[in-house]
Length: 72
Image (tube, rainbow, N blue to C red; front, side, top):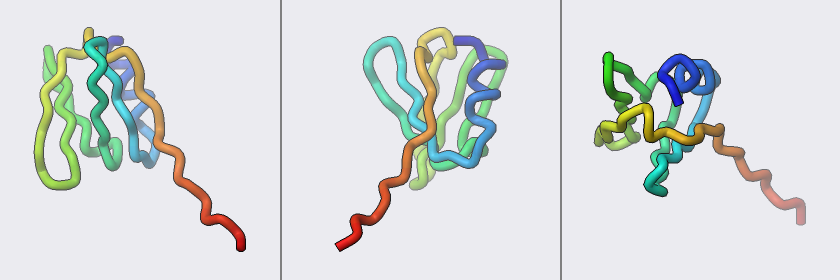
Protein backbone atom coordinates (compact mmCIF):
# COMPACT_ATOMS: atom_id res chain seq x y z
CA UNK A 1 0.00 0.00 0.00
CA UNK A 2 1.38 3.45 -0.70
CA UNK A 3 1.48 6.35 1.73
CA UNK A 4 -1.22 8.35 -0.07
CA UNK A 5 -3.73 5.50 0.41
CA UNK A 6 -2.75 5.06 4.06
CA UNK A 7 -3.16 8.82 4.70
CA UNK A 8 -6.57 8.81 3.03
CA UNK A 9 -7.82 5.80 4.99
CA UNK A 10 -6.50 7.19 8.30
CA UNK A 11 -8.15 10.59 7.87
CA UNK A 12 -11.22 9.71 9.96
CA UNK A 13 -11.61 9.92 13.74
CA UNK A 14 -10.25 6.43 14.47
CA UNK A 15 -9.14 4.33 16.21
CA UNK A 16 -7.54 2.30 13.42
CA UNK A 17 -6.05 -1.14 12.97
CA UNK A 18 -3.15 -1.33 10.53
CA UNK A 19 -2.33 -4.84 9.29
CA UNK A 20 1.03 -5.80 7.73
CA UNK A 21 2.10 -8.49 5.31
CA UNK A 22 3.86 -10.40 8.10
CA UNK A 23 0.63 -10.67 10.13
CA UNK A 24 1.29 -8.01 12.76
CA UNK A 25 -1.50 -5.57 13.63
CA UNK A 26 -0.97 -2.11 15.05
CA UNK A 27 -3.63 0.07 16.66
CA UNK A 28 -3.56 3.85 16.32
CA UNK A 29 -6.04 5.71 18.55
CA UNK A 30 -6.52 8.49 15.96
CA UNK A 31 -5.20 9.46 12.54
CA UNK A 32 -2.90 11.99 14.22
CA UNK A 33 -1.03 9.06 15.77
CA UNK A 34 0.15 7.97 12.30
CA UNK A 35 3.14 9.83 10.85
CA UNK A 36 5.02 9.62 7.58
CA UNK A 37 8.53 10.16 6.30
CA UNK A 38 9.84 9.52 2.83
CA UNK A 39 10.27 5.79 3.42
CA UNK A 40 8.40 4.85 6.61
CA UNK A 41 5.11 4.97 8.46
CA UNK A 42 5.26 5.69 12.19
CA UNK A 43 2.44 4.37 14.36
CA UNK A 44 2.23 5.69 17.90
CA UNK A 45 0.15 3.99 20.57
CA UNK A 46 -1.61 5.63 23.52
CA UNK A 47 1.35 4.94 25.81
CA UNK A 48 3.79 6.83 23.55
CA UNK A 49 5.38 3.73 22.02
CA UNK A 50 6.22 4.02 18.33
CA UNK A 51 6.38 1.29 15.70
CA UNK A 52 8.12 1.98 12.39
CA UNK A 53 6.72 0.16 9.36
CA UNK A 54 7.65 0.10 5.68
CA UNK A 55 4.47 1.21 3.85
CA UNK A 56 5.01 -1.54 1.28
CA UNK A 57 4.24 -4.04 4.05
CA UNK A 58 0.93 -2.40 4.99
CA UNK A 59 -1.81 -4.57 3.49
CA UNK A 60 -4.84 -3.14 5.26
CA UNK A 61 -6.13 -0.32 7.41
CA UNK A 62 -9.59 -0.18 8.92
CA UNK A 63 -11.42 1.74 11.61
CA UNK A 64 -12.13 -0.12 14.84
CA UNK A 65 -15.83 -0.50 15.43
CA UNK A 66 -17.02 0.48 18.84
CA UNK A 67 -19.13 -2.14 20.56
CA UNK A 68 -22.62 -1.21 21.57
CA UNK A 69 -23.74 -1.84 25.10
CA UNK A 70 -26.20 -4.70 25.33
CA UNK A 71 -29.70 -3.80 26.41
CA UNK A 72 -30.82 -5.84 29.36
